[in-house]
Structure formats: structure tokens, C-alpha cells
Length: 384
Image 1 (cartoon, rainbow, N blue to C red):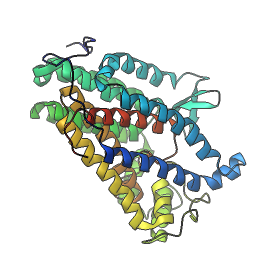
Image 2 (cartoon, rainbow, N blue to C red):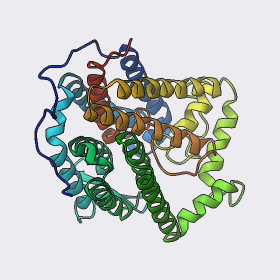
Image 3 (spheres, rainbow, N blue to C red):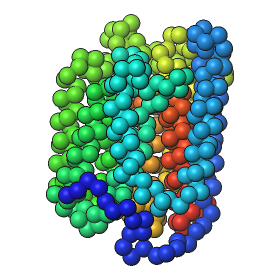
Image 4 (cartoon, rainbow, N blue to C red):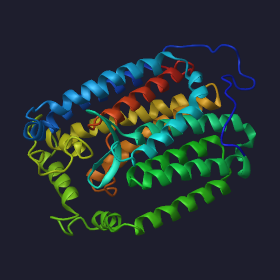
């Protein structure tokens, strides 16, 4: 029932070499497009708060380009060129590292608290959000674990229990921060991966029941979580209190209309809308560029989903299939939840918009994951 696995790169029956093809050029172009578009929107959305609090309207976009873009580019190239099978060896060490980082956010002198939550580790001028690394580490670990289990993936004791142990440990550490949005996204990513891995339906039902019960408990342990649900159901309630952010977001979307006010002309970014360059950046996109072009952004994410799941379907082995599924699900789930919360379709959760929202850790880890996904595409037969 062990949580680990042997550090062998080649699985049983694996050939010494794989037939390589060109990477998925369409997916590559879309990822580049989303990243560059993100820099533009961070520059616009953060200009007011940058000028007021940092004395530089471009402070946040400079930080995003330097720590997210430059570092992310290096990580992307590593993920793109290093054969994806190599990362299987690092699955366990990476998971252990992510657990250590999750614990360090509670260490005085290291943790950075913002909005009542301890989600960052601060080292001088640099801050790291461990949960972003945890998402990637979790995907890598689960993919390697289930490949190692083989047909035992259907065995409750050998596969389901180890999965529940590591998931429960990560979930507990994340909820201590607290970060409900990240926990929800990890649970949904895990759901996609265990389904593709071949868990029995009864096991999926047990996991789903347990996750739902845990969610209900978490919702009832803090009043602000229940308030978010109430605001989601009735956004007109307390528009100057708990309903402020969603009402301002909907106002931004409505003000933008079909074609928007024009790039850089947002009104809500003048400190009316909380987190204009972060969790609420999709509202600024809709306000400045309009629903038509905001819809085009969502269409780009749909392309990522279509190409990513096609790569997973045609991956040459279990590890590649599960990695591609996890990475693609990570991007799509966050995009859907973020946009959905701004449009009032889902409750506000504080999940950033992939590749676009401000956050160096999030962008760098996503770019690395995207490089790995594109590397997997080199060994598939997907047409470009």
C-alpha cells in the first residue's frame, strides 16, 4: 500500500526509444498568445494601484515579466526539451518538497499574510506561493504512482487508500492557510486523473462522497465561506459588504458591453474592483475589450482543452496520459472557475485566470507544465 514507487524511468514493456514528432504547434501558439496577452492586461489592470502604492504604473507588470515571464520561459524550455519520462524520477522528491513548502507558510518570519490568509513564503523581495508548486507536484506524483500500480489501480487498498492519504494531507495543509479555491481546483484535477486512471465506479463514488462531506464541513467552519454561497445565490444582498466584489465585477462586465470601453480605459480598476490584476482580471478584460473579445479569450482556453486532452488520449504510456490529463485539467478548471465567478455563474473562490492573472509563481509553474505537455505531444500522433 506504500505511497512511494521505484525510481525507474522505463515502465514494464516500455521500448528503449519513442518515435518523436513535431510538438503541437497550435497549442504552442495559443499558450504564447495567452501569456503575452496576460502581460498586456496586467499592465492595464494594475496601472492605477501601481502608481498609487508603488509610484510606478508599470511596477506590477515589470514584476510579472521578470519573475513570471523570464523565469517561466526558462522553465518552459526545460519542460519542452527534457523528455517527459525524466520527471517520473522526481515525482516523490517534488511531492516531499511541496509538503515542506506548505508547512513553511506557517513559520514566523517566512510567511507572508495577505487578506487574513498565509499563502506565501517571503524571501527578501521575492515571494513564492507554494500551492502553485503543489498543484504540479500532485499531478506528477499521482501520474507516477498510478502508472506504477498498473492493474492494481483498481484495488482499494493498494491504490485508493494511498491516494486518499496524500490528498488528505495536502488538503489539510491548504485549508489551514486557508485557501478553499485551491483545494477545490486540486480536488477537481484529482477527480479527472483518477477517472482516467481507471478507478472503479464504486471507488469514485466513495471518493466523491468523502470530498463532498469534507467540503460541507469546511463551509460550516467559517462564516465567510457561507456568505460567499449566499452572495452567489443572491448577489443583490449586501452590495457594500460581502457582495461588493461580485457586484463590481458584474458592473464592469455590463459597462464593457459587446466591444468594451477600450484598452486601458477601465473605470473599475480605479480601486472600485478588488484584485483588478489578480482574481478579477477577467472583469477588466470584459470591461475594456467587451464580451466578444473576452469570449475569444475563453475560446483560446477551449483550444487548450481540446488539444491537451487529445494529447492525453494519444499519449504512448500511462504516465504521459495522466500527466497530460492533469495539466490540461488544471488549466481548464481554473479558467472556467475564474471566468464563471466573475460572470456570477460560480461562487467567488479566489482562483486566478491561468497565464493572465498577476502572480509570478502561478505563471512560472504553468509555463513549465505547458512545456511538459508540449513535450508529451512530441510522442503522439496528433496532427498540427
